[in-house]
Length: 359
Length: 256
Image 1 (cartoon, rainbow over the protein chains, first blue to last red):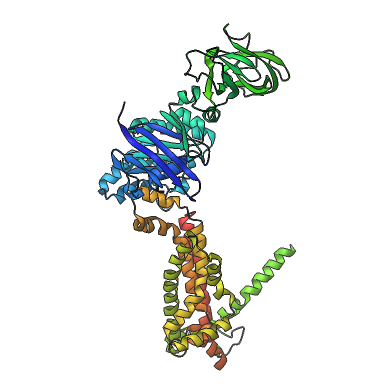
Image 2: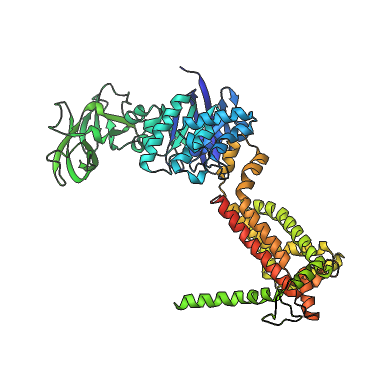
């Protein structure tokens, strides 16, 4: 296992002395890793980032970077690059001077400043815009300048606070690819804060899911998606169907789902408690109409279709099964028989269901 | 059509005094005859060679400039403290700062006369600077607080994470970004003091007499058209004071 580069231990932060915005966060991050802090607003992810940057101080806990204790250090004494959601470019300076600023603060020699600025502006694809002021640049270009400014002094850590929130969808996707490319080229340890799960899923080596000041799960994106640690994580990432269920100790491999009946789950799935309340997760795209696709031993239910949403590249069928809400996603054009108001038999394979202990 | 006609009439009404005074300053007549019988620069020459007018002019500049400096030195820290902190009685402090705007000028003048004479600085430059600073602070306070409220604090965070400590952040980032607001506030303070007549008449005395005071005396005691020269020059100066910030704003664009 790679040595730990950044360690947060038991970080607690409260603003008003009553509730904890951050309630005991601990995480180990490897050198060069791209990790995303994901969660809804108020979950503590931005507060944690602020403490990493030094703009806030934790009430208790520690932050160690490469063996050094950073916890109480001032932000200007940490070697950390920060990219803000609203770019925070100095409006009275050109792009080149903005990028040069950290180097001037560190008293680099003039010619080295010039060559580094040129290099990093080329890295973000803005070599031609060096002499423009921020107001003469588009949102995406401003964000790249902000990224260049955060990277130019080769910091130990790169923090990005919802950097793409102000951009439109296409530009956001473009910038996601750009940021990943730059991360691969530079190899810097990166922490990316966002509430957008698509970004988390597509960009990260690992995702840290925040909720109410605590970490729900820290794992690679696919693991978070297929094997969420809790119902919150399963519902927050991707579309989901959750059913209340109970483990049946007398029938291993089978669980009892309220309203639907006995459901078979894969024996190889994560070990379940022998008894107790469970939440069963079935992803909508894993459900299909019986009769379509390869013949298999499916768990089957009768679904009453209420609404059909056609996205062009896929179809979402919203309805109920056994009185419980059910969503099914089918790629491509709507299959015959899938209509609003219809009663269809749908099913999913045992390995496509995942049970989580009810918390 | 009617609103446009109304607007034009109002504009003419406001500009009319200038349209009368400026030609009169070039008049050859020894009284306030209008329209002037002929034009010459005699009264301009008289103004620029007469210490009775030049000393008050110099006094006005000295007092206005000093007022501007002292006002800015007091208001800048006050605004930072006010905008960036929570404390009990904030509303009251705000009202106190704006008080000089609300109190009638003559009442202020009388008050300053009494107060400053106890400090024995009536009739001195210092006394006038004290009074004018108090009168200039409300507007400067408003202008700079507004600029500060619209200021993005992430800029300071960006500067700090780039390695700039509090002092360097202030000098390299905060001050330059606030510069337009600071300049406007400074210009307000200067013009406010330069144009101020009522308090100056009460407390500037003989040695620190300002231009408005001299003009007031002149029109009471003489009917010398040289006063039209002074008025024209003052109007020109105020125009410059308004136009220069506009040009400056254009140059820096949407700087904040």
